[in-house]
Image 1 (cartoon, one colour):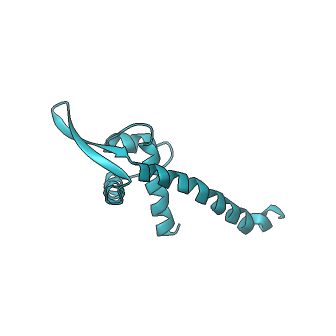
Image 2: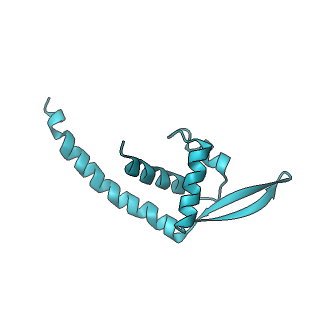
Image 3: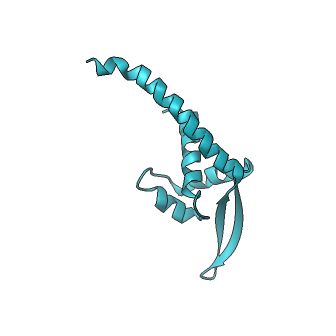
Length: 105
């Protein structure tokens, strides 16, 4: 898969994982596991990129005596998800065009 396409898909997946409630790294990985495997190092790279793009914010809170970073989706992050849904319809249309000959076999 094209690396840029995969990067964009993973970004949207992470945003979707925190769309309904703030979350932290381990929980994001756990929530995404049924759909996609994601290593911690990949996740934290994505989270930093999304924070730099103002698609999420981070706050630190104590949990069981340890500091934990919680991630919160911003309006820009929510817009990115909506843009993805629109883009996905175009991608599906392209997919149908590319595979239409396969249907006739």
